[in-house]
Length: 406
Ligand SMILES: Nc1ncnc2c1ncn2[C@@H]1O[C@H](COP(=O)(O)OP(=O)(O)OP(=O)(O)O)[C@@H](O)[C@H]1O
Image 1 (cartoon, rainbow, N blue to C red):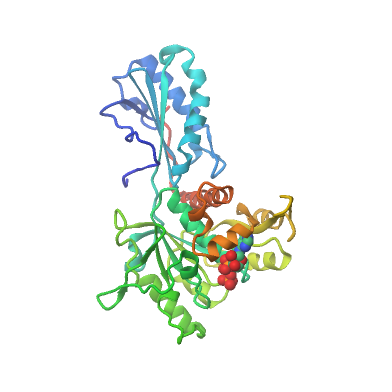
Image 2 (cartoon, rainbow, N blue to C red):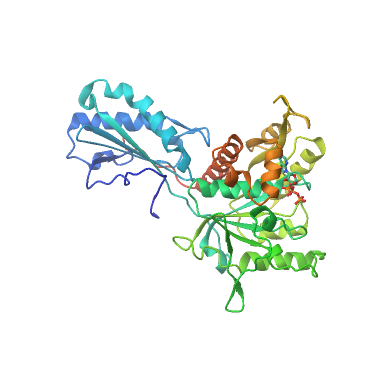
């Protein structure tokens, strides 16, 4: 198993050397723990296992979440390892575990113990067959797509990538929107050119914590991207497979490569979906009827090529009046939810039609960078956790469930 990543508190991961650790699945391995403490730790593990993971709506026991509990010197240690980046959720989980375990500490062998809860994540890798060599350093590729242009797909893709990074993942962003590359404007990297290595490979351009690549870095004003399909697909393939993704990141790998797809459901999208093994696709739509019809086409296209649809993002869902703060669904309501229901996928979240989203992304500082603690950044981070959690679930789908040793 790859090393676990600590979700962002100062304590080291639980280890059997310095604590009496009980693994939920291997509780009977630790026979040196007094029997009454052991029994109570098992109850603690059960209580934690029944807690619902907000990103998936499933109890931890039903997920491939790792649960460890231990007791040492008056402190109950708990460790939960999730399969998606969740650095911002440390305190919320600690609170949840504290409330759930408090009754077990009111009496019995753990009476009066204090609790130290740690949250970790361990991001798996999408299984692929032969695959493309250069993409071996990318654990998961997530496509952000829309059936229709102008619904805010690129804005969502860049904020989603930044949100995954803010949650602790190493993330790349590929602007595959070859007809109108907007990544350099959105991240303030206009005019930069990627370094070329070995005459063949591009070094991704670092921007706001992301590794980025865009045709916008390669085009000059005299070479506008008015290309026919095969040329466009070729350029996209090259950027995907000839970029040294992961170079410069801590372990030389990317947890996620977010691909901002061109709008529509034509050849380019199909080629990409077939060329590499995608962890899944996020479909962006607005609540308008026409956009929803096109979003359905997007869902169907990915289904056809066996790419899991991680969920739907409804953009520009509510308008907030800048004068009085009143919110109303000017483009309609409930459409994203209906598609999610009809096509057995999730509504990952809804974003408001907000001047700040437009101003921030258009000035090179997308909302998650510009106002990371703000309400809208919080929405993007919740969407990122849900999408990554779905990718985790899809990856685990074929796995054999653990048989619990109780
Ligand atoms: N939630 C939002 N509120 C306000 N403005 C938004 C929102 N989302 C996107 N925008 C703005 O709408 C415009 C189009 O967004 P964006 O470029 O992300 O759309 P797109 O679907 O990628 O478009 P295209 O199909 O042209 O690639 C941009 O100016 C962006 O700032």
